[in-house]
Amino acid sequence: MPLQRFTRVYGIQDAKIAPLTADPASGTPTYGALIDVPGIKSFEVSGDIEVKTLRGDNGKLATNATISNIQVQVTHAKVSLDVLAAIVGGTVTDSGTTPAQKTAWDLTKDTATFPPFKLEGVTPANGVDLIGGDYHTVLHKLTLSSFPDLGFAEEDFRIASFTADADPLLSNGKWISAVINETAVAIS
Image 1 (cartoon, rainbow, N blue to C red):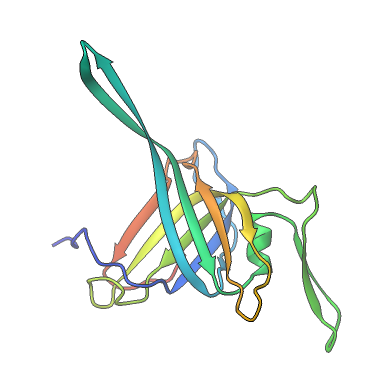
Image 2 (image 1 turned 45 degrees about the vertical axis):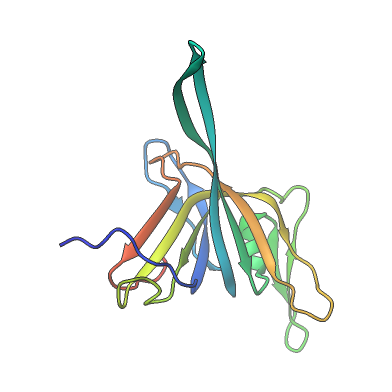
């Protein structure tokens, strides 16, 4: 018997991004290594629908609707230089020796490329109706739509966030996938 096609969704345990390295129109998309979004707090997907109404004979004759945008808003508790490089561009470099090591993300006008990336989030095991199962949401091709929220907060933790817009993959047309697993699986 197949799994039920509905579930409650409780919590988010993990989220990872992967740079989209190829999306051939007649092939298979390929992605770079997974990068953890540290301290994931929320992963909210929304969309816009454009509706056209045909009127005539003094009345409504037809309605047509199309998706005009799918967007994701992500908040996370820790800043990751690797995530910044993957979604904005720039380079991350490590230098020095203990006790003076440092790692730096540098963005220049030439390296601010806003490369496409995949984002996947998952509930904890048992975060769904199925005991031991989980729920994944995958956005297959995203591009940052506003600069990430960074900075500091007086006498408080600063929460990082970013917003990205989805495009369908050229290779298979996928925008978003929602998957219910009977047994929890790691992001891949």
